[in-house]
Image 1: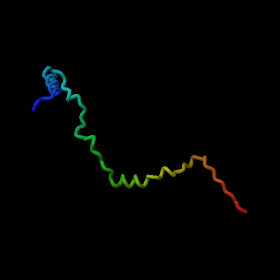
Image 2: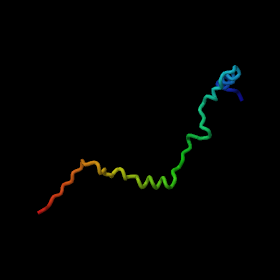
Image 3: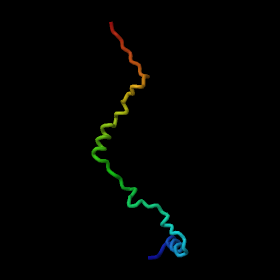
Image 4: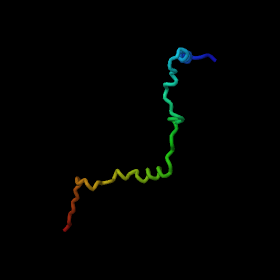
Length: 73
């Protein structure tokens, strides 16, 4: 199998005592960025429990709402 042009250039740089470009590439130490952790059962239940809580939550500090009471005769 033939060497690619990039591989030949890398080998030449190493031969000449220069830094190997493959050493400059970032590594993940065994972590694959594609893998995804599935949520646990507790995470799923917490997410379902809190799904619409903040939507209807009325702050007690907010006094912008006015309520009118009418007494019918």
